[in-house]
Length: 171
Image (cartoon, rainbow, N blue to C red):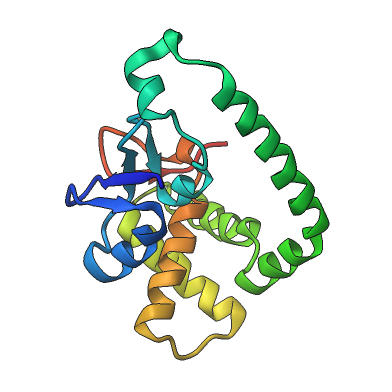
């Protein structure tokens, strides 16, 4: 099981516990670093990290055997076949949660008007507009947290800056 280090509180979390960690313990967490390969993931990108280097590969490098890669390739083809057969289910999930394009459209409209905003303020404005557009009147704390994360995950990396916490519209 892949484990990550939270970029905010430095806790080590298994992949299947990252969502609950963000909701319950560390709502400001945004970056997660893989313990094995030291690759940093932002937002929900950690979910795509399905295969990592083994401990043997980490310490032995080029001297490890090639069998592990062949096993991974076989598993990868099986997963692709399964995903293709379940393609209609994925479309249903996207329709329920709202398309990422819808979030991005709202983000672009706001950033075109305002120019540059702090990410927390942008998130709050975008979630309010999204709720108005979807005619959502009452939101529980858990639903609000989910909407916040969906909004933040929809902000393109190119709009962000490492030097400050401002989000800027990029054409």
